[in-house]
Length: 216
Image (cartoon, rainbow, N blue to C red; front, side):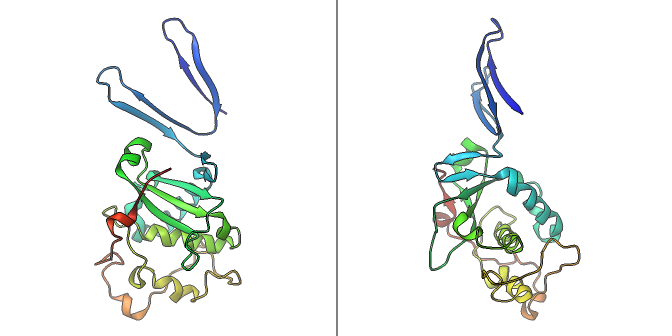
Protein backbone atom coordinates (compact mmCIF):
# COMPACT_ATOMS: atom_id res chain seq x y z
CA UNK A 1 0.00 0.00 0.00
CA UNK A 2 1.19 3.51 -0.82
CA UNK A 3 0.22 6.74 0.90
CA UNK A 4 0.82 10.37 0.01
CA UNK A 5 0.88 12.95 2.78
CA UNK A 6 1.30 16.72 2.75
CA UNK A 7 2.49 17.81 6.19
CA UNK A 8 3.05 21.25 7.70
CA UNK A 9 6.53 20.73 9.13
CA UNK A 10 6.14 23.57 11.67
CA UNK A 11 2.83 22.49 13.20
CA UNK A 12 2.90 18.82 12.23
CA UNK A 13 -0.60 19.15 10.80
CA UNK A 14 -1.37 16.64 8.03
CA UNK A 15 -3.08 18.66 5.31
CA UNK A 16 -3.56 15.79 2.85
CA UNK A 17 -3.32 12.05 3.41
CA UNK A 18 -4.46 9.65 0.71
CA UNK A 19 -3.91 6.02 -0.14
CA UNK A 20 -2.92 5.69 -3.78
CA UNK A 21 -2.10 3.07 -6.38
CA UNK A 22 -0.38 5.57 -8.65
CA UNK A 23 0.71 9.14 -8.26
CA UNK A 24 1.80 12.24 -10.14
CA UNK A 25 2.96 15.20 -8.08
CA UNK A 26 4.01 18.60 -9.37
CA UNK A 27 5.17 21.24 -6.94
CA UNK A 28 7.45 24.33 -6.98
CA UNK A 29 10.86 24.30 -5.34
CA UNK A 30 11.16 27.06 -2.78
CA UNK A 31 14.72 27.93 -3.79
CA UNK A 32 14.24 28.76 -7.46
CA UNK A 33 10.46 28.26 -8.07
CA UNK A 34 11.10 25.61 -10.75
CA UNK A 35 8.57 22.81 -10.87
CA UNK A 36 9.48 19.40 -9.48
CA UNK A 37 7.74 16.34 -10.94
CA UNK A 38 7.45 13.10 -9.00
CA UNK A 39 5.55 10.41 -10.84
CA UNK A 40 4.65 6.77 -10.75
CA UNK A 41 1.56 6.54 -12.92
CA UNK A 42 1.19 2.78 -12.98
CA UNK A 43 -2.61 2.71 -13.01
CA UNK A 44 -5.66 4.95 -12.78
CA UNK A 45 -8.30 6.72 -14.89
CA UNK A 46 -6.87 9.28 -17.33
CA UNK A 47 -10.34 10.03 -18.74
CA UNK A 48 -13.68 8.20 -18.32
CA UNK A 49 -12.75 5.88 -21.23
CA UNK A 50 -8.95 5.80 -21.00
CA UNK A 51 -7.25 3.79 -18.26
CA UNK A 52 -3.54 3.96 -17.38
CA UNK A 53 -2.28 0.37 -17.30
CA UNK A 54 1.48 0.79 -17.00
CA UNK A 55 1.58 -1.76 -14.19
CA UNK A 56 0.41 -4.40 -16.69
CA UNK A 57 2.14 -3.46 -19.95
CA UNK A 58 5.51 -2.03 -18.84
CA UNK A 59 6.94 -5.41 -17.71
CA UNK A 60 5.89 -6.97 -21.04
CA UNK A 61 7.55 -4.19 -22.99
CA UNK A 62 10.72 -4.55 -20.92
CA UNK A 63 10.87 -8.25 -21.85
CA UNK A 64 10.41 -7.49 -25.55
CA UNK A 65 13.18 -4.88 -25.48
CA UNK A 66 15.52 -7.27 -23.67
CA UNK A 67 14.77 -10.09 -26.12
CA UNK A 68 15.40 -7.90 -29.18
CA UNK A 69 18.03 -5.62 -27.69
CA UNK A 70 20.12 -5.67 -30.87
CA UNK A 71 17.30 -3.78 -32.61
CA UNK A 72 15.63 -1.98 -29.69
CA UNK A 73 18.70 -1.07 -27.66
CA UNK A 74 17.87 2.64 -27.98
CA UNK A 75 14.68 2.03 -25.96
CA UNK A 76 16.38 0.57 -22.90
CA UNK A 77 16.79 4.02 -21.39
CA UNK A 78 13.53 5.38 -22.83
CA UNK A 79 10.93 2.79 -21.87
CA UNK A 80 10.10 4.72 -18.69
CA UNK A 81 9.04 7.62 -20.96
CA UNK A 82 6.13 5.60 -22.39
CA UNK A 83 2.69 5.96 -20.82
CA UNK A 84 0.47 2.92 -21.41
CA UNK A 85 -3.22 3.66 -21.83
CA UNK A 86 -6.10 1.31 -22.62
CA UNK A 87 -8.96 2.89 -24.55
CA UNK A 88 -12.21 1.14 -23.65
CA UNK A 89 -14.42 2.96 -26.17
CA UNK A 90 -12.70 3.91 -29.43
CA UNK A 91 -12.50 1.64 -32.48
CA UNK A 92 -10.18 4.03 -34.28
CA UNK A 93 -9.96 3.90 -38.08
CA UNK A 94 -12.22 1.03 -39.20
CA UNK A 95 -10.45 0.72 -42.58
CA UNK A 96 -7.01 0.51 -40.99
CA UNK A 97 -7.55 -0.39 -37.34
CA UNK A 98 -4.58 -0.05 -35.02
CA UNK A 99 -5.19 -2.24 -31.96
CA UNK A 100 -1.97 -0.88 -30.48
CA UNK A 101 -0.51 2.46 -31.51
CA UNK A 102 2.48 4.48 -30.37
CA UNK A 103 2.08 8.25 -30.43
CA UNK A 104 4.36 11.11 -29.51
CA UNK A 105 3.10 13.44 -26.82
CA UNK A 106 3.38 17.15 -27.61
CA UNK A 107 6.13 19.11 -25.90
CA UNK A 108 3.86 20.90 -23.41
CA UNK A 109 2.19 17.70 -22.21
CA UNK A 110 5.57 15.97 -22.16
CA UNK A 111 7.04 18.64 -19.89
CA UNK A 112 3.96 18.55 -17.67
CA UNK A 113 3.53 14.78 -17.42
CA UNK A 114 7.12 13.63 -17.78
CA UNK A 115 6.30 11.20 -20.62
CA UNK A 116 7.40 11.45 -24.25
CA UNK A 117 5.19 8.73 -25.75
CA UNK A 118 1.75 7.26 -25.30
CA UNK A 119 1.14 3.65 -26.29
CA UNK A 120 -2.59 3.20 -26.74
CA UNK A 121 -4.32 -0.18 -26.54
CA UNK A 122 -7.84 -0.37 -27.97
CA UNK A 123 -9.91 -2.83 -25.95
CA UNK A 124 -12.31 -3.42 -28.83
CA UNK A 125 -9.54 -5.22 -30.77
CA UNK A 126 -7.17 -6.61 -28.17
CA UNK A 127 -9.97 -8.37 -26.29
CA UNK A 128 -10.48 -10.50 -29.42
CA UNK A 129 -6.85 -11.46 -30.03
CA UNK A 130 -4.49 -13.96 -28.45
CA UNK A 131 -1.68 -13.01 -26.09
CA UNK A 132 0.85 -13.95 -28.78
CA UNK A 133 -0.79 -11.59 -31.27
CA UNK A 134 -0.78 -8.78 -28.72
CA UNK A 135 2.96 -9.27 -28.16
CA UNK A 136 3.58 -8.80 -31.89
CA UNK A 137 1.47 -5.64 -32.01
CA UNK A 138 3.48 -4.20 -29.11
CA UNK A 139 6.78 -5.18 -30.76
CA UNK A 140 5.57 -3.66 -34.03
CA UNK A 141 4.87 -0.30 -32.40
CA UNK A 142 8.16 -0.28 -30.49
CA UNK A 143 9.93 -0.62 -33.85
CA UNK A 144 8.36 2.66 -34.90
CA UNK A 145 10.35 4.65 -32.32
CA UNK A 146 13.46 5.76 -34.19
CA UNK A 147 16.77 6.09 -32.31
CA UNK A 148 16.44 9.88 -32.74
CA UNK A 149 13.11 9.80 -30.90
CA UNK A 150 10.80 10.36 -33.86
CA UNK A 151 7.93 8.10 -34.91
CA UNK A 152 8.31 6.13 -38.15
CA UNK A 153 5.72 5.07 -40.68
CA UNK A 154 5.00 1.30 -40.67
CA UNK A 155 6.75 0.59 -43.98
CA UNK A 156 7.62 -2.82 -45.41
CA UNK A 157 11.29 -2.15 -44.77
CA UNK A 158 10.56 -1.62 -41.08
CA UNK A 159 7.88 -4.29 -40.64
CA UNK A 160 8.42 -6.73 -43.53
CA UNK A 161 10.01 -9.42 -41.38
CA UNK A 162 6.82 -9.78 -39.32
CA UNK A 163 4.49 -11.19 -42.03
CA UNK A 164 7.48 -12.95 -43.63
CA UNK A 165 7.96 -14.93 -40.41
CA UNK A 166 4.40 -15.27 -39.10
CA UNK A 167 2.37 -15.15 -42.33
CA UNK A 168 0.24 -12.42 -43.86
CA UNK A 169 -2.75 -13.23 -41.67
CA UNK A 170 -0.86 -13.24 -38.37
CA UNK A 171 -3.22 -10.65 -36.83
CA UNK A 172 -6.54 -12.25 -37.76
CA UNK A 173 -8.68 -13.71 -35.00
CA UNK A 174 -8.21 -17.22 -36.41
CA UNK A 175 -4.41 -17.10 -36.57
CA UNK A 176 -2.27 -19.25 -34.30
CA UNK A 177 1.22 -17.82 -34.14
CA UNK A 178 4.40 -18.40 -32.15
CA UNK A 179 5.27 -16.57 -28.98
CA UNK A 180 7.92 -14.02 -29.98
CA UNK A 181 9.33 -14.14 -26.44
CA UNK A 182 10.14 -17.84 -26.65
CA UNK A 183 13.85 -18.48 -26.28
CA UNK A 184 14.16 -20.23 -29.67
CA UNK A 185 12.04 -17.78 -31.67
CA UNK A 186 13.88 -15.77 -34.33
CA UNK A 187 12.66 -13.39 -37.01
CA UNK A 188 13.25 -14.31 -40.64
CA UNK A 189 13.91 -11.41 -43.00
CA UNK A 190 12.85 -11.26 -46.67
CA UNK A 191 15.85 -11.76 -48.99
CA UNK A 192 15.66 -8.18 -50.28
CA UNK A 193 15.94 -6.83 -46.70
CA UNK A 194 18.70 -9.09 -45.40
CA UNK A 195 21.55 -6.87 -46.64
CA UNK A 196 20.20 -3.62 -45.23
CA UNK A 197 22.46 -2.06 -42.63
CA UNK A 198 19.60 -1.45 -40.24
CA UNK A 199 15.81 -1.42 -40.30
CA UNK A 200 16.19 2.26 -39.36
CA UNK A 201 18.45 3.05 -42.31
CA UNK A 202 16.64 5.68 -44.39
CA UNK A 203 13.37 4.93 -42.58
CA UNK A 204 10.39 7.10 -43.42
CA UNK A 205 9.24 9.35 -40.60
CA UNK A 206 5.71 10.37 -39.77
CA UNK A 207 4.96 14.01 -40.48
CA UNK A 208 5.31 16.26 -37.45
CA UNK A 209 1.64 17.17 -37.33
CA UNK A 210 0.65 13.50 -37.43
CA UNK A 211 3.04 12.14 -34.84
CA UNK A 212 2.42 14.61 -32.01
CA UNK A 213 -0.76 14.34 -29.98
CA UNK A 214 -2.25 15.99 -26.99
CA UNK A 215 -3.15 14.07 -23.87
CA UNK A 216 -6.73 14.92 -23.04
